[in-house]
Length: 487
Image (cartoon, helix red, strand yellow):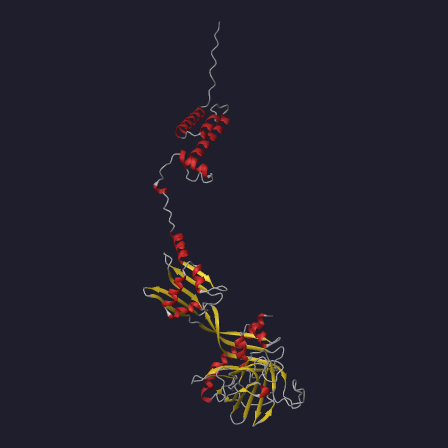
């Protein structure tokens, strides 16, 4: 009988056998080092039975990836970032902790910046004065007792300025760690601030005044309705609009001469602090076009320190009398020898001009002079009469009241406020009755021609032109640039 040789078991490539041995070794090592349920699960699912070379290579790579993923998830300090709080706590209790290598040691976390901010928030408080607030209520808002208010006010005479509160005013408190007031500060306006600082003897008061930078500014405007509204629309403040009316008041009657389409250009001083305009100085130069005629004015301070306004060629803008004693008023009744009186209801000469304006509107002296009367006078009501030299006299009737310092026998300057529009005496509404006399004879103030004041002296003319010509050139340039930008 012939014996057939036994069938040898199938041989696998040597590389496959080595790979299988390596996988087995790695799995054994993983089971020893990481005895977790996840690894146990991987142990049961991975198969060492290789059915073909291609399938074996695929399983080899999958196994290597699984081991690498297992090692990385355990060793990386960021592997559990997305876990829930409970999972993180459980992992911390069960997973082994490895000492960090020196190169990977984390720097200690400091909280100096947040701590500094927290300390500042604890010691600095700010409150805004509201309706009905007092210093006591403001102290209470920051946790200070009423006794602190009394202590502060009694420590320094000037401390009482903190009790003169205005709505919207901000008070800044600095408190010590134990809650004691160490500094109180408040800004009064754009230029001034006050503060109280605690010391061994109480509080020291300090007032700080910022010094503004002075620069020149330019505005241009066109009259569409009233001068005040047109000036505001152009960016010119009310006070500067009043100054402009005073500068040109000798030539332009702002009560009746203003027309739609009139124009003005103004260069003025502007006070600036930290880039913010905080106030205005005087008008440096101005130009006003009324009914097609242009008037120009330049401010000039002579060698003696006296300032006045002159035309561009050096003639004085100032005349013996201003045209209108009330700015922006409306003429309600003109000079007439045969007017019917509105109250007496009979023909009676109206020997002056009536300027209607809101009650309380300032009234200015038409020229320098001596006050002959500042008191009551019959149907004129409260009246001021001024003697201007030996020739001229002006009268201002129906006043609501007199300005401070104006009294019989006193002196007044041209443009000085002498009283306020009212309706005293025989009057149907608030207005000024203004009369002008020449040698005791009533004349029409609107038709009266007055002489000009002295021009620039020959000795100062060159100095004046050196100041006026650049201002005139700038107004021309600014206006041209502005009009070109609007095209």
